Length: 150
Image 1 (tube, rainbow, N blue to C red):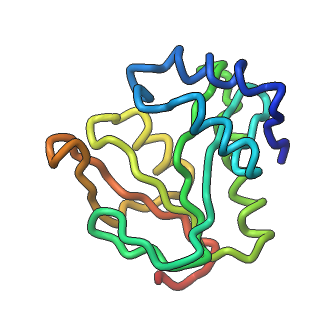
Image 2 (image 1 turned 90 degrees about the horizontal axis):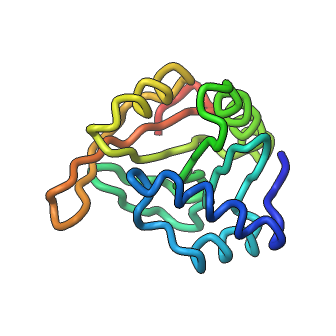
Image 3 (image 1 turned 60 degrees about the vertical axis):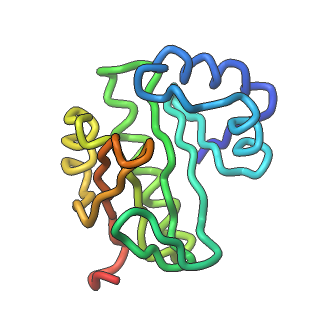
């Protein structure tokens, strides 16, 4: 995995700004914190921001156990290149190498392109979430590095 550097923060922020229709909530300070704490992958034009939960965390209808990974954002600067699939697979292998049992993510329910992408890449729908005071529906997905479901 290639992690983002402080010097790349403006470049990465511009990638998110190009997709403000999907990521209107991404702020520069949030991105900088992710980069500074080693939670931002930037490889082949693909950005992944993630965290590893240190305690059990509730997201929508799911209780996510501690020591599980939450993929917060993934964006591809070169749409249609196939880079997102390659980098995501490398990211999943990286998380597995850390002996973490699963990767979780949430996505807007109306984002059919993203939901199809996650399902093609081994993620399974496991719950729902609502944002914006219950007006924006989301789906929670899980990719398991183990055979058993938590």
